[in-house]
Amino acid sequence: MAIITISRGSYSKGKEVAEKVAERLHYDCISRDVILDTSDHFNIPEVKLIRAIHDAPTLLDRFGHDKRSYIAYFQSALTERVKRDNVVYHGLAGHLLLKGVPHVLKVRIISDFSERVKAEMEREGCHESDARKLILKDDQERRKWTRSLFGADPWDSSLYDLVVHIHKLTVEDAVDFISQAACRDAFKTTDASMKQMEDLALACRIKAELVDEFFDIYVSSDYGNVVVYAKDKDRSTQKLRNRVKTLGEKIRGIHHIEVHGGIPVPANAV
Image (cartoon, rainbow, N blue to C red; front, side):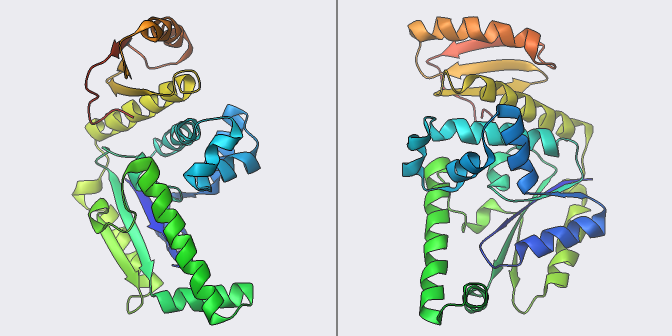
């Protein structure tokens, strides 16, 4: 049992690979489902949410929410989905949003640029030069988006456990490699790794509840012992403490919750 995230650029056959891996392993395959969950739970129109999380970061402020709010909502919906295990997720930054969970197999699918250009030409009915410009623009925007939000380059191979180039290797080859890797001991779900997944989901849920009012916070959870980290220790910290008290009654799984202000944030916080 595992969670598989598949990162892919446009026209890389990543969606096809994800669906076939899920079919092979009898896993759920999700992508747009997380957008729908986020839209329903946080009462945000789907179209608005899609634009907010995919548009360039400089455009997000126009929606009246900080970009971190939308990502917090999305991460909460994603962690709730995948904590059930046996899932293939292909979509927004899964390898970064599910950090620190041992049974997550992080995969990157890439394809030859020339093949991607051909696919763009067929879909849009455009000339090769125009298709090249469109593909390059899409790649640049994705890199800019990921760097802005996560400080990472999606083309950095060190972010992934497995990088598969669809060229000499076929889609079926990719499905074979990913399916075999997912069954390795390193990615099997254990009681300990499942607890880490549950703690991540809990921390994300709490952040999503608070981020609109307190956007500059981080949250960690260890066996349900939750710490909310505020950037500064000032008057707003007491307001945050008062708000946090209400969450213990609202959200299941919290054993203890407290607020720390003006101290370093641990690596496992979201």
